Every structure is written in C-alpha cells, then in structure tokens.
Image (tube, rainbow, N blue to C red; front, top):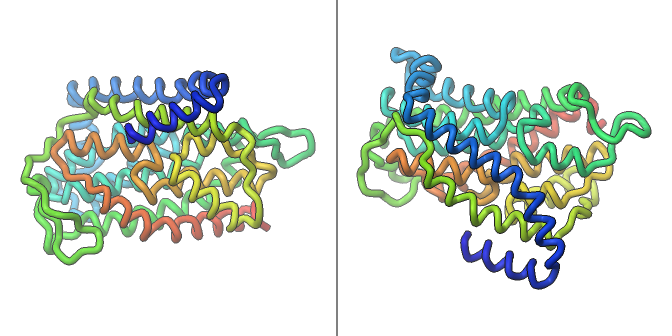
Amino acid sequence: MWAVGIGLAILAASLRPHASVTAALATCGPFATLAAIIVAAALAGKLGAFRALARAAVPAHASRAASAVAVLALTAGLSALVNLDVAVVVAVPVALRVARRQELPAGRLAVAVAVTANATSFLLPTSNITNLLLLDNTGTGRTPGHAHLTPAAYLGDSWAAWLLVAVLTIAPLALWSARAENSAPAGSNRQPTGSALAGPPAPSRQVDGDSGPSIGALSDLLPMFLIASAVRALLGTGLVLHGTFLIQLASGTALATSVSNLPAAAAFTPTGLVSLWAAILATTIGPNLLITGSVASLISRRIARDGGARFSVRTFTAAGMSLVPLQLAAAALGLYACGVLS
C-alpha cells in the first residue's frame, strides 16, 4: 500500500499538481475524523469500555452461535445507525473479548465483523462517508429541482435492502464464526484444515480481549490517504457510470474495490436515482472483495492483530467473494420492493 500510495501521489503531483492539492485538502477531513475516532477508541479500551460493552451485549451463558449473532448484530446496528468507522473500532475489540470468553475463533469473528460493518453501512446517509460524498455529487431527486434525497426519502429507499443484506450477512457469518469442529478456541490461532476460508498456520498468541485500537492503527491511514487523494486528483469528480443498474453496479464495484471506496465515491457523479443507488451499494458492499477496498477493513485487521487474533487477508477475501454477489442481489431485491428499480 505504501508503494502504491507514494507512486500514485507522485503521478498525480506530476500530471495534475493543482488538483492534487485540492484533492488532498478535500480528502483529509474524513481521514482526520477517523484518526480522532481511533484515538478515542484507544482511550476507551484502556478504560475498560469494551470489556463492559461485551459483558452487556453478550450474556456469559449464551451459546457460541448466539454470541456470534449478538456481536454481528451489534456491529450492523452501529454501522447503520452511527457510522461504519465507529462500528469497527468498537465492535472488533468487543468481538475479541467475546471470542476469548465464549471460546470462539477470534480471527474468524474479527473478519465477520469487518464484512458485516462494510455491508450494512448504507441504511442512513451518515452510515458511511461514501454515502455523503455520493449524495453531494448527485443531481438526482424525486421531484424536479430537488437536488438531493432527503434523509427520510433515503431511508424509505434503503430500509428493505438493508434488512435483507443484514440478515443474509449475519446468519451465515455467525454460523461460520461459531463452528467448533476442526477449530480451536480463541487464542490458539489454529485454523480448520480443509476449509476454503482457512489460511496457513500462524504462531500461537494469546488473544487480548480487553484491548482496543492501538495508536499504531493511525499508520494504516497514511498510505490509504495518499491513494485516496491521488485517485481523486487523477479521476476528478466527473466519473459517470453507464448502462443498466446491474452493469453500473458491477463496474462501480470493480472500481471501488480496486482503488478503495472513498476515492471512488468522490469521483462518481450519479445521474439519477438508479445510478445513485448503484454507486452506494458498490462503495459499501463491494469493498468486501479486497481488504484494501475499505479503510475500515484495514483498521479491523490492525485491531485484531494488535489483540493477538489472526486476521487473514485470504480469509477476508474468501468470505467476501462468497457473500458479495448474494448481498448485492438481496440489496437489489430490496430496492425493487421499495420502488427504486421499478
């Protein structure tokens, strides 16, 4: 990421120097906000906030599957009602704590949290920075002259799609995270053999369920900031998706996954309601295909690794490839039910 970020930054500064400065200034706000969230969460972890939240959210007598469902439901709720970045810096430490207490595979549960947080970050405009960027760039509306969707109209379009995606995400990931056969309790870092989501074995390390994000997580933001700023400078803000909803969804997902969702959202200019929702789903659900598709995924991995859990990039991608097509189909069905695609 550092190599790509520095290379793109040099290329953007060479080809579009003025645009590079403007893009950097426009992009620094969201990253500064995320840095503040990480620092606040690190302090909260030191004060034992995540230990208390884990105890309140998941009863000690809950089964493994019920514990995983509770953690992922908490993640989806935070991502939808508060913000994606808040969700991961809160839910991953809670997941590590619950994994240690309930003897769940900590690495799996951390991956499940990251996938769930990304996929459910479109219920409200404020659920994800990308939603706000796309709404700012769009000229669509339900009535002529209305430049943007109101929050109520947005929620009216999104609720059914969000509900279907949340159920389709939480249910299989909870069952996968709670699997006991061929896996060891949290802290042993053994991966099940013969599983499509299994990675190579890693050295054993005790999972620290009391920890929160470390200040070291801030270092992960720097290369992503360079990438986001450079791509935004090179692409500008006039990238229009063409074709049917499915074609726009596929092409938007490919771009959001390859360059990260933040610069993609800044570059997209939706031309109508259908185009807007294709871009929203592409920049929230689509990034689950690659760990670099979303800054939140990288932060989740950093927190999990700092806490002693093995967060496998290959496992994350395998989970994303298994779920993203179904999630996008479920979201499209929900939009159709609400009249967006009719």
